[in-house]
Length: 359
Image (cartoon, rainbow, N blue to C red; front, side, top):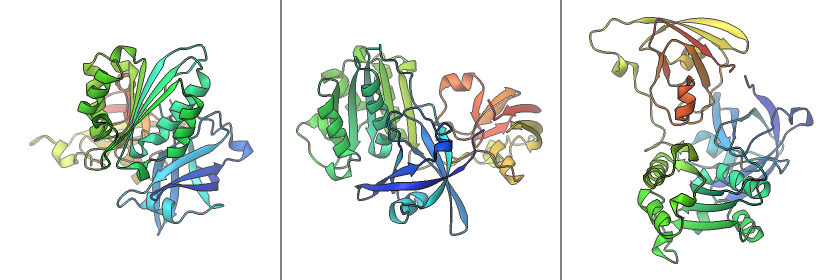
C-alpha cells in the first residue's frame, strides 16, 4: 500500500486569481515510485493549526514531461486549497502519496481514435493531462475538448490550451462554454449539462464518431453529460468520469441511525483487514462506523483523503462477506463487480467480512 513521502515545492505558477499550479521536486530515488498515468492524482497531507489535512489533486502534467504538477483552485471554506493558494512557498516540504486513480484508458501509438473530453472549472486538471498525452502518444488520433467556465478570466490553463491547439491544429478542437459571458453563438453560452451536450451531439459531434469520452467536474454536470452520451448510444464502457464535488458540495454519508432498521437488534460483524501485509481483526456493528473510521479509531494508518466517496484513495477489496456503501462517486461498475469498495463509505452487512487493502 502507498505511503506518504516528503516532497518539496519546486515552482508555483499563478493560473487565475484563485488557482495555482504547484511543480514538485520529486527526488531521483522516488521517481519510479511516483511514475504516473495521465489522469491520475496525488494525495497531500499537511498539518495546519494543529489539524491534519488531506486532499487529493489531479496531476496536470503528462508522463512524458518529466514533471509532477498539480493545479489547486481555491474553493469556498476549502482549508487546504486556501492554504495552497495563499500561503505555500517554493522550497516548502509536503507529505505526498504516490499517484493513484483509474481515470484513463490505455494508449497505443498505432491507434486512430476520436476522444471527447468534457471539463468544468478545475475539472480541467486531469483532462488537460489526458488530452496532451493522447496528442503526443497517438499521432493518428483526434481530440475534442469542451470546457466550461464562468468567464474568460477563470479559464485555467488558457494559454497552455491555446498553445496545444496551435501545435495540433488538425487534431485538436477546443470549445469554451461560458456561463456569465455571451459567446459567439448560443452553443458557447451557458453550462455544460445534458441539454448542452445534446446540442453538441446534434450540431458538431455525432455520437457514432466518439470512441472514448472523459468527463470531469461537479456531479450535476457529469450526470448530465453521461445521460446525453448514453441516450445517444455511446456505450457505458466508453464513458470515463471523475467527480470533484457532489451536488451542493461534498455529500455527507448516511448516518448509522438512518441505516439501522427500526426494531432490529444491533448486529455485530467480525471484519478481518489485510493492510500492508498485516492482518487485523475488527469487531464492528452493522450500523456503526465505516471500516475506515474503525481503523482510524484504532490508530491504524489506513489510506484516505476526501472521506466523501469521491477520490478512491481508500479503495479496498472485499474478498469474503458483504458490505454496503453509503455513497459511491468514484468506483466504476466493473470495479464494484470485482469486489472493490470505498472503505470510507463501507459498513459490514454479514457476520464475517474479509477486506484487503493490498490488492
